Image (cartoon, rainbow, N blue to C red):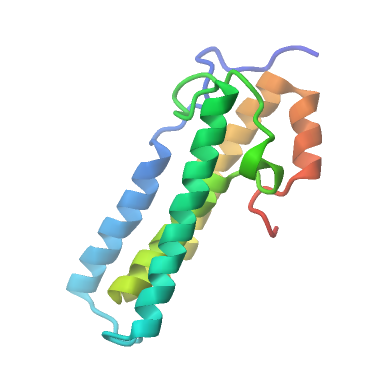
Length: 162
């Protein structure tokens, strides 16, 4: 099978993935300031604690994935070459646990802070990650690892539930 790995040996992302989350949060705060919406309860304990729980769960998932990459000896930074196909830890259940964590963090912070625009922007963040990060990484990993990656994709869902 010919190697279809790009010459630069990375997915060729034009923006580091955490910037997508940071941008969504910044946009949510800016929109909240410019055109506030009021559909969340202000000072609601249930909302705050659900937001905290979502944020903590997303961070735990990300740290688990980060640690799994470290133990496998591959790069977490997508600007560097992938050296190993990681299928252990959270990657047994979901192909993109770190990226799934980003919309969950946005949801958690938005609920905890009463940031309505953050909730509205979740689909935009998810779509941006899907098309501008995940799909590029998938093409790169298929070119780099070939059939073992294709088999992994058939076994494990991209976003967990779908």
